Image (cartoon, rainbow, N blue to C red):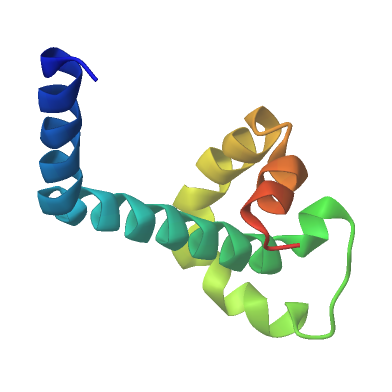
Length: 92
């Protein structure tokens, strides 16, 4: 093992040990975004073509969620591999 390789490994070890705050924030942001996507999917199931008995009660939420609908639809169209991503995360 060379001297440069040794110091590089030590540097990586300490950066990983003390940079857990950024990693945890990234994990929480990713999980939060997934939860928001799932909630909006349940709210807008009629747009996808699936009817639910509770959709009558979801109408009350539409005025509050209307601003998010267009952005969510664009995001879902651009995410062509959503099932592949979830399968790789072990969520399916």
